[in-house]
Image (cartoon, rainbow, N blue to C red; front, side):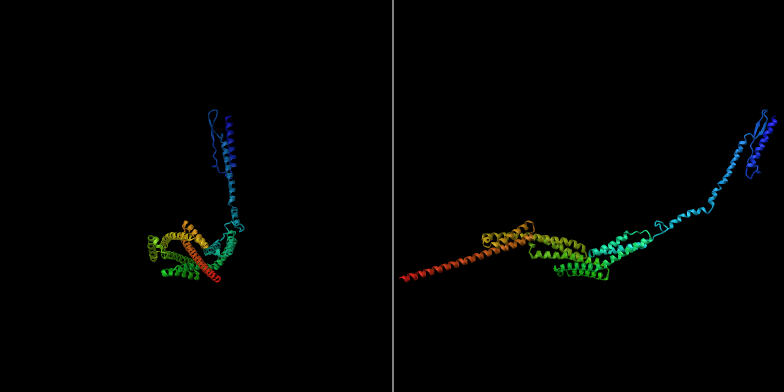
Length: 424
């Protein structure tokens, strides 16, 4: 019985081996593929027999041969086909010019930048020379062109070219206004310079400092030549320098005028110390100007002028006080002499000016007060003279009347005598 069981087991193992060989693809003859594991089976009489026991289950691991099916993953071989990679070429579609944002259609802005720079330069030049003040309506039109160019789209090359053309138009408009303005601008600067120079001449500055005036004249001539040569910015600066020179010299002319007035009105006696200090400061300013320190001299000249003006103001104050006293005295005499009655119109006029002088004196306008007191004083004197003249005429008339009365009395007496003599 045991022999039969053993025989059956052997046959079974052989059958399984045959099946496993057939299941391996194309390598059935290779016996190294899967070694058959056997286990010893102990029989009832403890005799060990090699039986492929459960190796039948390990045979199933041979099914992992199915992993050979991973050959199916050869499906990835499809990407190896060169045709499929061509699909990424789709990004080339943005090259269509209809889409402005595409980097494949670069827009050159050099022409636009140049046109903008040209327009900005033309506009600045026009502003620097006052073009908007001379031609306001034309300036607004040019500015409108500039604004249109600034607001135009600049996405495509065509847009850029159109905007650049508009900037060019605005630049041409600014230049046209500039060309018409320059002669007017140059004439205005010349008028300013000539006015300042005339003030110096009228102040007698040329008689005292002819060399200083010649330096300013040279600068004015330089400005004129630069304008004629078309060097407008340098001409503008030269004109401003010349005008500044004349104005600084006019401060000196004012000093001369004030000092001359102080001396002519004999006001030095009212503030001699300050007058002497002002003279010393004026001498220092003149030294600085001669040494080429014109800015320092110009600044200090204003202080010198202030000193002389203080002396003049103090002189007017003292003089107004004196004239006030004189006017008060004349008014009192006129009232004493009954000028307010005998010469009422003249006295009333003098009294009105006298009251105005008092208001000026109270408000510390001593110059007007002094002049008004002087005027009222003279009119009070006239009223007194007129009163005296009227009185004298009245006395003459009275005397004449008395003489006539005496003559008439004598005539009457003679007539009476004649009558008396006749009756006798």
